[in-house]
Image 1 (cartoon, rainbow, N blue to C red):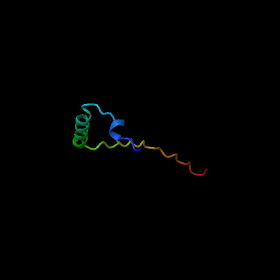
Image 2: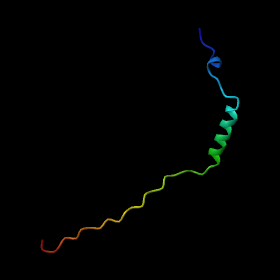
Image 3: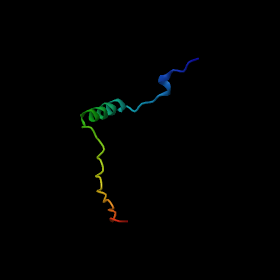
Image 4: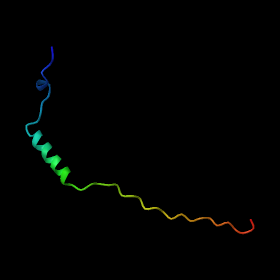
Length: 51
């Protein structure tokens, strides 16, 4: 016998409203990209002439 899936799942009374609010907030927010780290300037070691 197959179980009735509605009996297994319990929702909070305001679950759908909370989901819709959260989904709306996500769609209205701008994209959140990672900020690139600033590259540190590396100094090159100069070789002495003749060595």
